[in-house]
Image (cartoon, rainbow, N blue to C red; front, side, top):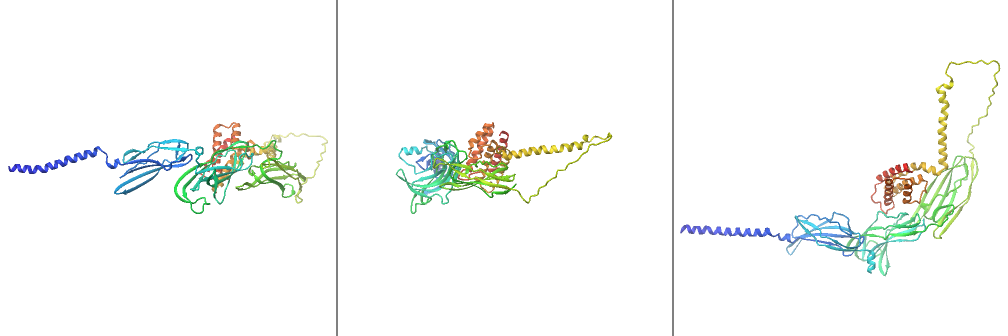
Length: 601
């Protein structure tokens, strides 16, 4: 009996222990069968920062996960999306932690910047994101991207847009056009910053940037009954270099704008109290111009000048000593295509050597256009004493305001070429040698030595003058042709002139003057082609030069390299900003192309 009681006392704790073991096993099996509560509370969402998107606008796509506790959240990757362009595959990361009423919440966010490229309705599919080793998916999004035309048809109007405004939509070839990039935005928008495009496609136009030291200033205007702010961002002068239908490509500007509540002075461009910020890329609409050709036939003496000009011709002195240089300056002053004016053709009197003229251009750029002067200096050397006259000539230019050619007569210039009285001259008197016939008996001597004619030194002395005179004659003929035949001189000196211009590229680039460096690089390559083919020295488009090289039988790889170089130069030299330049690489490419062109042209 005593043993039975002892057994009962010992079995009670054992039974209690077994009960707790069975209960613990049941709880553990239940926990293993279902995920923890924290895991069930993970949420993954996708959202965009605006419900109204138009073509060219940037917007933010945010992927966010939240849970009571987050340990390891891997960065998501976006698939290829229709209608938009992903500007960077590396998103901006954010994280936060909060406790509300004893409940903790942790969240991680990833922000992708997208740019709308096409109009229409597009779907952003669920995005996979890994949280603590488990994959989750976001919700699906639908975005509607509208074009400007759609907004106008629906009776709505953009709150901000870019417009290219031209002073003339039907100019003559060579006539100046004022092109202004105008930003229109509603009064509740504040422009924080803007970055103009690094390139602007204006093939067939000479482009000059016009700067305003004051910067953009805004004014209030009414557009279709709606009040807008108007600010001029950029101003250019465009000069069409040929007639026909020419296209001006779209111009793009990247802006950072904010919705504002305005107080105080509203005349400033950057002002206001911020409420919401967004990035916008605006593009102007492409424009096609019908450029009218100049009236035909063009008068003799037309130099390609289009605008309003005054022309003058002068010499420093009308009396010069023989052999001294005589400089004749011809100046064009006024408003128009000063950069594209060619030198007038003069008939110089016989007895003068004419050297390559020197060109000097001085221009001033303002919002009203380009004005200034271009001077041609002819250098003459007189070789004979006497009185000469530089004949009068008629110089023509085209006035687009009047729609006709105008002219100015340059009067004749009398010149006197004098002999230098202090110069010494050498005169040799003629001497006569008297030879009398021999009389009497003649005796003949036979010399055993080698005859003089058979001596090597004697033959060399006889041939030496010929060896000197023949090359000298060819050199003289070549120099005379270089002085008198301008086409031949341009062909011969093309390589040397190109090398000089390429040398100037490094000097300009060393001064961080990349725009002028690339313009000089273009001048080196284009000038080499023009000189080798005897084409006009200015006013020819890149397309025309490439076509001329192709007609000479240049291989297609060389044509493609030349076209690519011209496009690179135009992208940098005529762009508002400096952009990213590799002038050393481009300069070497230009040298290589010129070397290949020398074999073809």
